Image (tube, one colour):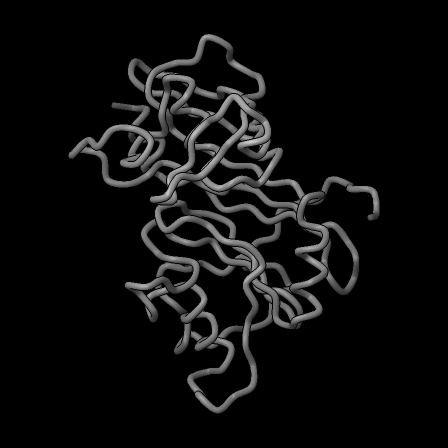
Length: 244
């Protein structure tokens, strides 16, 4: 893998982005970058990445397949899922436009940089550090921490507190491993669950959404082998919570 260098985030106004058909522009997705090999979007909270048993059509995958086919069901064009974001997590989501691009991105995925942002309940005593534990999954697909390394997989979450208020903290997170729900489990274990987390935290009627956002991602382009950084702006709602 090539040495990573600092790159400026790509925006939808950069000349590298191809023109898009507004007619087939999907709802809930803001385009960050597109070329013949990858398609990068900012996914809204509440939208599935791919279908599940209850929902088939209202997903990022379905909408973007329709977009690249321009509504032509017979078109052979398609996109390929590289990774996923939970339904209620917003932010940078990368798709491939070919099987070979998908394999390249997935083969190199552990070496890419993924930076998240979250609003958590309360304040952390240590303002910067690494949360680490072994995670396992129970029969209802909920993740939990175990003491025995043989019963779980190591998960490491780097964090830095960047703003605090009376009730909440905004943290910048470096995803050092890619375990399911690891950010949510780690902050819940630390006594400061992610705001809006109904599974690992508390359900509060006044909270509108899960405050977890995939803010910045740096990847290697599958064709040029150059480092590219994509950034999805922090949702306005995060700051409005801190200003309460």
